Length: 640
Ligand SMILES: Nc1nc2c(ncn2[C@@H]2O[C@H](COP(=O)(O)OP(=O)(O)OP(=O)(O)O)[C@@H](O)[C@H]2O)c(=O)[nH]1
Ligand SMILES: [Mg+2]
Image (tube, rainbow, N blue to C red):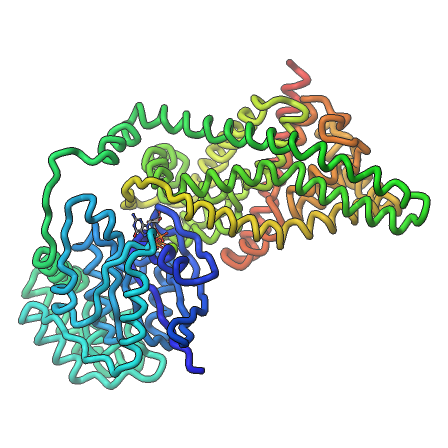
């Protein structure tokens, strides 16, 4: 059966991933900050007995890509076989969104428009005449509210119908007469784009003036002299750079269209989210609220995690006595079963209770748009350590998992910012390390120590960032977008939590089971002791910890959660609270665990995204920083 390829394209935060999630079984990450999707997600969907390949492309403001995520979308649109573009438009930002729409129309591909966020537009008294827009653009325009599943069915029906028929030729919107004449002359002289070059001749003629680097060699070369002559005429005539002149044309068209089709019935009352923003973005109150947010967030996780953990403990404690008879039957069976059980008990009783509230609360806050306000508030602070607010999205994702956070740096426009963020990201405690911190401090040192560790980690990031950035050039200014505050959607948050939980069950739990089984065997075969002996100069000599923790740290490189699971086995304790560690040793151990390189996956992602040299440098940097920091704590504990 023939399957059609439909791509969702739109500006960041327009609701592409939300629409994708409504339509497909696979769930793409959707969150209320620009640049959530930095990779392409694909899913096959069935409608009216036909199969569609649906693709969620990273958000882009235009086809003149600035960052790596935008480049991915641009490359895909220009070179892959596409049957239909669905341009997802944020109705509350119509004028700005239509600039991309007009550029997409220039591609000359079949297209439909989802006028998304209708619910928000209505709330603000914005009425959009979608039929008028459809007439003006010559492509189907369907109002949707993807978050509530509204209009989605109609959208897909229109798409299906469009794919059944020969699409009518797209209208084109003439530019200012002088520029239009030059574009048409170039388009007429241009050879037909070949297979694998998706744009129309008009598209490439405009690009030859606006951004020649985007025009394929075979089309650009024969026209190079003509395009240069056209450019210099535009510059002389309009007294503007060519890129700006074309941007101006699209901007003018988008403004004109949006004024013609929308009507604004102003409301007398100030919107609640605007009133809230006065507090959230206030230089002083905003920072207090931020502090309260962090404290509240972590207190909630601590409380919920402790509660789950205590509730699960008695249930899990019923299993070990059932395994004891195996000890006499067969050493092989006993070591395997005991190892597997330790892994299962650690995953369910120690890691999951903290992991679950963390990912759920994160999903809720991602949806509110508050995270972008954090970026705004911390922009100044981040500049001081050589970064800027736009990196905050990646850093906040880093509290969940370092690997996607490394991908998220793709929304940063220059390489310098990407590398610096990538070197600092491994220091942010991911959910695995958060679970380890919560579980160990709850058992051995008390919740206040968790806060001390977080505060210390932030200091480490600031100092390391500042130090590295001394060797790099100064960062440029960046425009940051702050989306409106929204009431979080429970359905979205549950879907996001479910997605991460499945990932945890499929990829992490098997590793924890295998790791703890290996630990049982390593102990029995006395290999663990050899690893411990090798690492003991660092673990016991420098950090003053029991040498048996060496193996746990080596295995921690595969998954940080393994550390709590294995520590019990290594030190022969029935529960975390019975580990033979003083509160001081627990904190020194945790500081080291939090700061040394997160995990194997992070290493692989870093190698692929930034090169193996950067991955190696980052691993080395993190081990040095972790050792120095843990040593500092040891000395402080000795003094006080
Ligand atoms: N009120 C309302 N909110 C929506 C709607 N569609 C999406 N959202 C919300 O808008 C935010 C952004 O949605 P995403 O689906 O992540 O947007 P995106 O276009 O994929 O964004 P990028 O991946 O950054 O390009 C999320 O908080 C969604 O819950 C809608 O129709 N109405
Ligand atoms: Mg997205």
